Amino acid sequence: MAHGNAFTGTPQPMPCHPTGCYDFHCHSRASDGTLPPASVVELAAQNGVTCLALTDHDTHAGLAEAAAAATRLGIRLVPGGEWSLRWDTRELHVLGLNVNPEADALRELETAQRLAREKRAQRMGEKLDKAADVAHSYAKACTLAGSTWPGRPWFARVLIAEGKVRDMNHAFNRFLRRGQAAFVATPWATLEEGIAAIRAGGGVAVLAHPQHYELTRTKLRRLLADFCAAGGQGLEVAMPGLTLHQQQLLAECLRDFPLLASGGSDFHSPEQSWLTLGRLPPLPRDAKFIADAFR
Ligand code: MN
Ligand code: MN
Ligand code: MN
Image: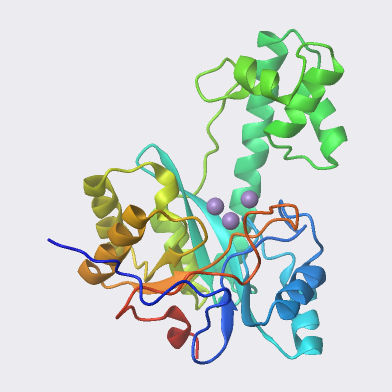
């Protein structure tokens, strides 16, 4: 099948949907972003965004603050989250957009994901105590992180403080990376469970950054078939930095699967100089825009 550039028009600095500028994927300090939720909304508004989804990792904790800021600034906040889910042996990210964060199913998912992080951190600590000959690395990582579910960067800081490694890279390469002695996979909810919870919470499930999973075309299509069968409705296709080949593949997926098109910057911090909150390439021609499902 021959493809031209499937994305319409020339790239615009601030491409807009007829109803305004949007960004449906970004992070605040409620997960691993650097700005407080209100500041993320303020920056989005400054950049001309009129419809913003805050999608922190595995939590809705930033939404109340973000919603108050959005009301103050007269822009629309779409309540969202980005969920780490298991498919095969892989970890995928699925956005739950336009959810009711108070829904029981989503509160339960949020709790289950936190417990999964906690369980993983405890196991990682046990392994690291042995592999790196550290005493109580879990407790030490908890103290540094100020939480009971520290991620790998906190364990890396413990290793540095104990003089076991030179720096973060060394910590990951020697102990924490997949395949190394202290690696533990997080026991996330499955793709089906995550999508079911998002839908029970009134939301739309969107597969985030499909180009990041290093899937072959065949495997991506298998994933999308499973994703649709589980009730997934959207595909993130407009984001900074896609190659022409990736754009064409995603446009093809939109044609071949009953999926709505979404887009987002995946903004985490103003220090990410290669992306801007609210600045996205245009959607593929003929794509059905996901915001039309939000009314
Ligand atoms: Mn992140
Ligand atoms: Mn992600
Ligand atoms: Mn993200």
